[in-house]
Length: 376
Ligand SMILES: *Cc1c(COP(=O)(O)O)cnc(C)c1O
Picture 1 (cartoon, rainbow, N blue to C red):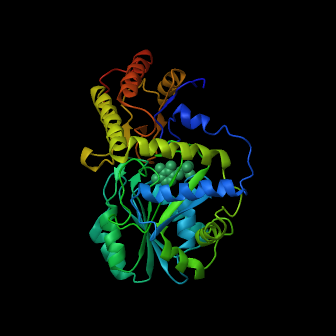
Picture 2 (cartoon, rainbow, N blue to C red):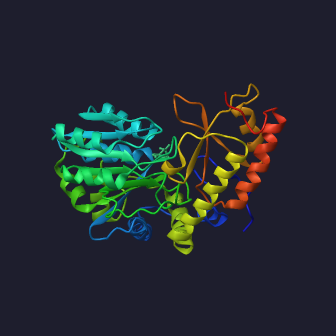
Picture 3 (cartoon, rainbow, N blue to C red):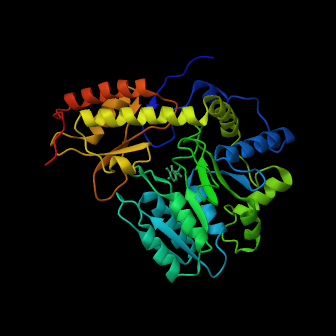
């Protein structure tokens, strides 16, 4: 097996993968309608539930062919009974996607907005639930990937259940990294895609959630032909297959990624991501960079650094210098502040971050940016 050039991706996914996962895509051609392939997906679906410690009788996973946003679309359009309302607890770009999905489907919804650098106020959420007894679904994002803030999902989930609503959480940027317990965290549905925490490739996304609620949703309005949760679930239960063509090669790679996930172990993997995250924060601090999210509110996977007030600072120039040397940095996703992001996902470790900061410091030096960086 020839080794492939190793790039260190510090963007929020797709992530750096191992060569063994890369090569797992290279398999004999197979028609995915063969029993052999359905058998592979059965084990895969169970593993995806086990990662969030779900009881296989109570929870299931449903696979989709698409990027992570398909999961948000599927959950929101499929799990709302007619005449009911969605509440989106929104403190960032990814929850805003859920609001836009409500708008596109014409679903009654409340966009409960909070500042992007603040934890949502539980009292306000409860007030909204009291005032709107027709809320049947609460949605939020676990780690807002745009900033790296950690939202209090266990508490929001408890409120949802107290008021008879189901709770869907976008865990795309925490799943298989920061430990999640679906039951203890009061989650009815969570979601992710293969290219993030699992360190596999794009094309495979999945919703993990409560089987009884999916079965109940069979009678809810069908608002999408391709993206309906019950229809896809029902097809898996009856045939073991996706309704339409699955991402065959990504599924092979993800099976290998899962082997590597179990071999590393939940605790050791989270410890590794934490090492990487700490090295990122130390590196930024040494160079004088300020961040958007205060340390106690960070989810431990995305750092969001503020552009310095230096006339020579150019994200593009610094990006290109690093990119040419195998390191990818990523722009921010906040409309009010200019930021860039460094993320701790993927098959990387502390030493890669040390190497990155040597190159990053060089990039600042050659572009004439003073260090430590300055703010007005
Ligand atoms: C990456 C990500 C998604 C999915 O984005 P795609 O571009 O569709 O892959 C959704 N939610 C969160 C929180 C994410 O980090």
